[in-house]
Image 1 (cartoon, rainbow, N blue to C red):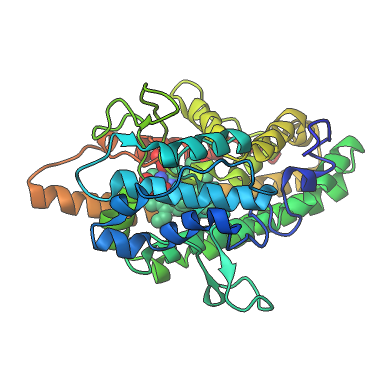
Image 2 (image 1 turned 180 degrees about the vertical axis):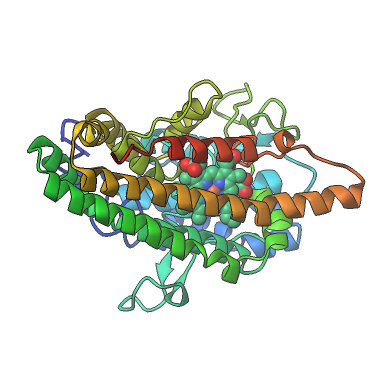
Length: 397
Ligand code: HEM
Ligand SMILES: N[C@H](CC(=O)c1ccccc1NC=O)C(=O)O
């Protein structure tokens, strides 16, 4: 990636696809022979965890240099495979591992630095790069897709990761109009801006409709009690209070947040484009900014460019074109709608199973005790992000 390129003019140089947005197009499924041991072990994770043998197999891996990984797609597949191995190694059972052995830790740390990612499984691994078509000539529909790697819980991880991917794909259809939006604001062309904003709003509504697939493909109890264990991180984590030691890298434990779609670039892209600024008082803005460090660095650079160059909100606010204000507000309403729906999903997939678990243990967690794997007090955080979005609506007079 040429660092001097303008990301807004050449998103393709920042690994952003005009059709799929931040999704990794046609991910590789295999690595060169010497690295295929990582792919093979990661693919066998569910069976080996079931047999209680995963850690033992992981400890047999050779320690490999990352220098012979050729090209971006090999690096992304290797990071995905090593991230799956790492989550399996740490969380295989309640005897949680505090040290990641050097044969995994050293290549994973070095490759993470090269990609601008943390050495933990991120959304860009398990969602954006973890997919293939069954029939390569077919379309990207749920029935023609599978994940490259899975976690224990049967088809739960396939459902969870693929639905998230399809939501991302639906939202990504807005990406192609971003250059038109910047051009329209630059040329003060209200008609063109109105049209582009209308297509952004429809993309977000398409994403909301696709999100409903989660109920068909993900079982709440399997998600909460099995899969979600492997999404957890080691930052403010009671089971790994100091973090994880990456052997061969540092004797000092390191803390990293667990997976979350708060690491999704497309949603942060909409906020940046529309000038929706999340609150600083309660730490929401800081958290979302921190999550940009969990995105591939080219995507983070693109988001920062959109945030620093977008004056859509200012242009629409100062315009007396009511229809333009309505088009802007349609985008904001669509984001409020999907964030409200997301809260319903979170209630079904986290809050309800968590309350059921509490009552079985005779406990009661308050709203600010239920944490997301990304580290937030999830209900407080998600309601607040939704409310800030709602406050971004402009007066239509
Ligand atoms: C069963 C499915 C899901 C669950 C249980 C879930 C849970 C959560 C939780 C707990 C958070 C708070 C941050 C954290 O601590 O991790 C969060 C944040 C977020 N999630 Fe989800 N999520 C799900 C699916 C999705 C999907 C499919 C998307 C869209 C691709 C998404 C987009 C977001 C975004 C953008 C945030 C940051 C807050 C915001 O911008 O509104 N989530 N999610
Ligand atoms: N924050 C998680 C949900 C979660 O980790 C997630 C949600 C949607 C897509 C991907 C992920 N995770 C990894 O990328 C929770 O608290 O359940």
